[in-house]
Amino acid sequence: MTVADIRTRWLRGVSAPGARLRLVCFPHAGGAASSFHDWAALAPPTIEVTAVQYPGRQDRLADACPATMEELADAITDAVLHDPADDRPLALFGHSMGSAAAYEVARRLADAPGPVLTRLIVSGRARPRLTREQPPDPQPTDPEILEYVRLLDPESAAVYDHPDLRPVIMPALRADFGLLARHRPTALHRLEIPVTACGGDRDPACAPQDLKSWSDVTSQELDVRIFEGNHFYLTPRKQELLAYITSQLT
View (cartoon, rainbow, N blue to C red):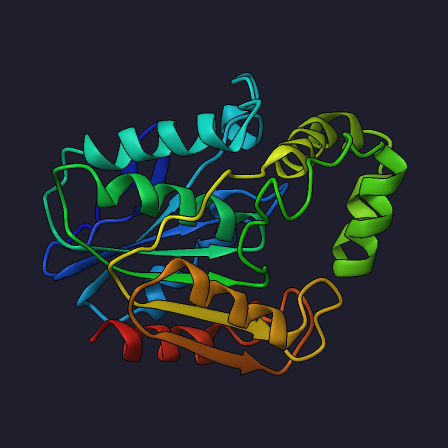
């Protein structure tokens, strides 16, 4: 039997016709849908895994990056609602910047007719700061961005020093960090679904206690799970993480 790929402008994955639920994954800043390329093979057949492909990278290199989180979330929500696949229930998983994007999409799905959203799973980031809590930051400079990337992922950050690759991949990273700097909602939307927050016990960007802030965005329970590792704990712990996500969705 041939397994069909899911390949739309915004969503990538592997079709799982027998699955009862679709898990939509949101990558980190500078990341791409390929960050989750092997999740489908690790997930049970009851869960279909798709990932968001942001503009400005890989095969969407020519597509302009959104200027705001609102613009990005609107486009992803529209893609999810108009995906011709089916109307199976959804769960969202976002890591780092993807947590903020997934939350904004969850807000929009809550008010839209379409597939039922069952859970939001966030990772490696506290909930968005409000304008009254912290005004928007200035656009970070390239050296500031790269210093932060090296702090979070020193091994992978070396790619940004490659003279041929840096001009290609830096624009998307610059756009993503600028989008995050400007993202300051005026209010939080309390979701009528449970939220799960995950993180690494040695994450320099998001301490375990910061994950508890996501209780502010749900009227239901918040589950917090800490894994061994740094900001990108989910790479070496992907099987453990997926097992935990599966337990949350069944």
